[in-house]
Image (cartoon, rainbow, N blue to C red; front, side, top):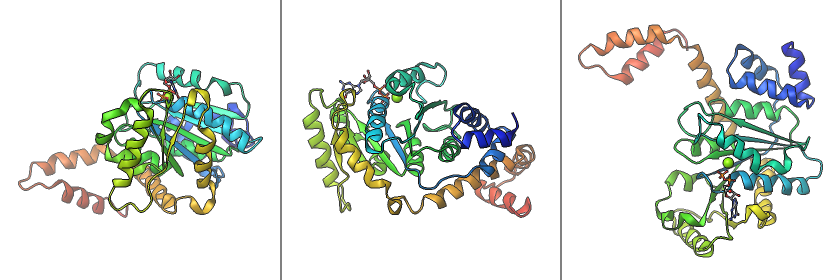
Length: 305
Ligand SMILES: Nc1nc2c(ncn2[C@@H]2O[C@H](COP(=O)(O)OP(=O)(O)O)[C@@H](O)[C@H]2O)c(=O)[nH]1
Ligand SMILES: [Mg+2]
């Protein structure tokens, strides 16, 4: 199919065209940049990030959130990107996500897409940012991005999402003190899921206390308890999430950050690594070699970039 035709079909809501566009972007084909340059990316589509440890119930919560969003805005269209690096080789987790979100699997207004991570550091696929932009051009009202909270991915999801939910479970128990600081910093909202489990109350209380103790915080990050499997606690949670749907709340730095990210991707793609590595090998033999100076010098001499 001709690219132009594919893009216009995708933008008018054709799901197969959308899947095709996403695959082209995901695989970084030469068509990818052409697609990204041509689409009309709506800036007012809220992106809801859901992160947390494997098994916390992120997919189940996404499934429940879809139902809540459909009540909140009847007739809305929702896209879900599920990124799970815990099983880059097997498709196990991806199937799992599909089962968890199966309530909506045949719903024409809900589009669910799994992405592989291809060993990129952190939990996001190299192209999650671009694929989110494709979704923003395809007529969705809300975009959910589910990612496992490991390594870099917290920072990445925070840069991508307008509101970031960090999902924890009571079993985390004592670990609460050792929660990676990265996770604590990016959470706009904490969700204590599996509130039907023993120890949930205490866990929630400890979490609240800890958030209050955090020095330099004027307002504690809100905590909501949910039982995602039974859609319990979703109303309260959605009310807090919806607070971020107002355009003025959408992070001001976001576009700037994304502009830089896109620039970096493009720079990266434009680099011919062979001559770089050749020069590098020569330079590193010199006494007093400094990597930063080398990189700086190299950038300056390759002409205008
Ligand atoms: N008891 C209980 N189990 C839950 C709840 N939410 C999810 N689960 C279960 O936890 C397991 C992992 O859920 P999943 O959504 O796949 O977690 P993810 O890896 O974070 O996406 C599944 O067996 C779910 O049915 C909950 O609120 N209570
Ligand atoms: Mg999942």
